[in-house]
Image (cartoon, rainbow, N blue to C red; front, side, top):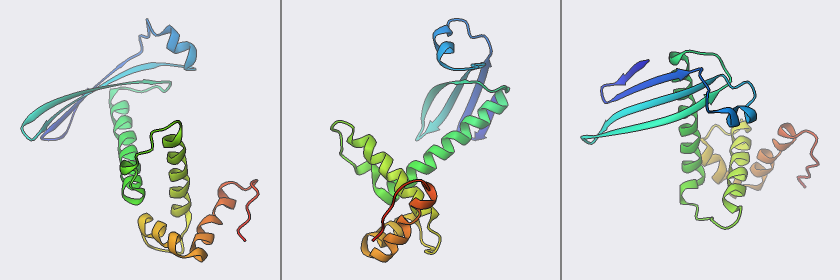
Length: 158
C-alpha cells in the first residue's frame, strides 16, 4: 500500500502473514499474526530521507489498517513527548546513573496524569505544575487524585 500524506512525504506499508524464521519471536508473542514494514520517504530541506520501521502484531488487518494504526501510535507518542518536554523539560534531564532516568520518567508520567485529572484549574499542564510548586493547597488538591487513581493505597495529605 502507498499513502501520500503531504507533497513532501510518502509512506509504504507491507503486511506479511508468512512468519517463517520468526519462531523464537512467536514463542514469546502470543497469537502473532503479522509482520509489518512501514517505509517513509521525506524531503526535508532539500534532502531526501528514508526511514524503515518494523512492527509485529497479533491483530488481523491489511496494509491500510496498519498504516493508519502506526500513524496514530506515533501521533500519540509525539504528543506525549511534547507535553513532557514542555511541562517537565524532560529533554534537559541529565540523569544517567543506574535507573534514575527510568524512575524519573515514571514519576513524570504519574505527575502528568495527576495534573490532567485535576479539573478546577483551567490552565495547561505546565501552569498547573508551577502552581502546585507554589501553592500547597493546590498541591494537596492535585495529590488527592492519587486516591482515585490508586484507591487501595494508603495516602495521608496532612
